[in-house]
Image 1: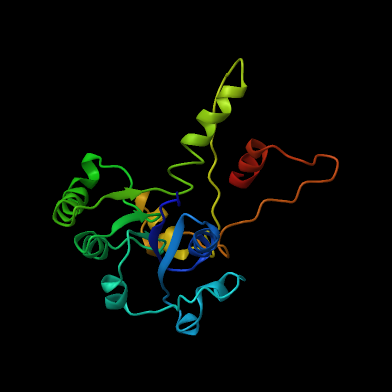
Image 2: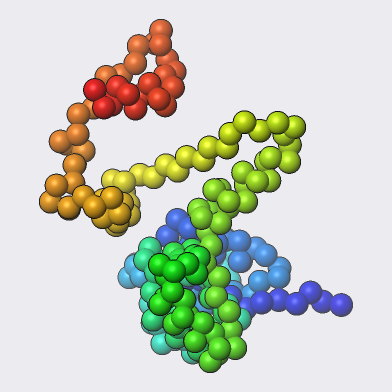
Length: 215
């Protein structure tokens, strides 16, 4: 009895998208149905070429309508920014959507977004799932899983690290979330650098480094 396969579209091929694309190509339970790319230099290439794998016969496209018309069970959305209208088009066309860009939790804050998504799901008979490494794994499932190895837990601390210089969009959102005007946002050039620790004191703890950074 052959294993059921699922036709999946990969949307965007950045860091997260390429990781997912490689998995889809190599997973026998997945049939790659299409790949959407935003970079003109990637258009028209075989999907396998983007991730260092043999040819798949699936050619990349930047045509949204082509992806909408593609017969697929699911779209994995790995774009930098969430696109609610696009999600709903996928959902209404009969494609389930998994998004690493969110929204993630149907809280009061995101009520309007999820009502729109749920309406599209009802219309298309589909489903939506927002997930990623964080939230969804590193700050949620992984710590709880690791606790099974412990006989005593005093505290669980999860630290998220991001390169704000490379991810400028995330940087602007972070400043906005703490109500700091963009015009007043500190820049790397204006921010004093803490002194490098001596070899005798290395490694400093994160608390030491933070304290010296504020001084």
